[in-house]
Image: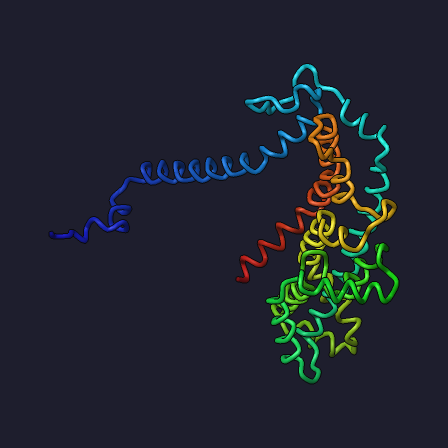
Length: 307
């Protein structure tokens, strides 16, 4: 079979008129937007159903086919029952806020300092230590929980939020995440900064601390914001570590506390209260993402351009 090289895509494109190429470009753009819009709709649909269901009466909460928009009978009855119940939902909110905020601040601070040290400082066995840290990425977080629990029990911190905050403050790990992730992310960014910046700071007699605080940290703002959002979200949503380390109701956080609302026999009234509580619990994470999205997008754009 004879193949004509004149039919290659390059030559075929060259034969098209400018109007046809513009039309193909518009169709390609429309197709990309359609696929992205469909993907966004699939991602948003569960949250839309959850929010609208939290406003419906209990009898209409689980109808089939599912309703996506609030009806005429929408009310705040589920939220009223939730707030009037014996469940200390306000206490859960406060505990989650303190825990997620403290862990985020501590983890981001220590991993940023460590990332800068591995990228810009010289000290013995630096590469060997960093290689050991990377090896620890392959160790599942769950395998470290038993020795961590024994350590916290020895320190008398079990059933205290310090049992989760302390590993975050030292950068050991955040809930569900190895501490090496933040160190690796910040080290890779600091390596991309031009050496001339640090040489100019050294000429101005700036020490390591001043160079780090005045030059490195401002430039790393988008990466720090992106890392902060990731750590805050994972700590806020974490269920596993609070379930192990926090036992009393006074120390309980939202993911574990919401599960305590659930009726084991599947009572629909309790289930609608769970949906209302989950809807409320998402709002802080959504607010953090909306506030920080400019820095997150900037971080990914810079990473894509430099990659």
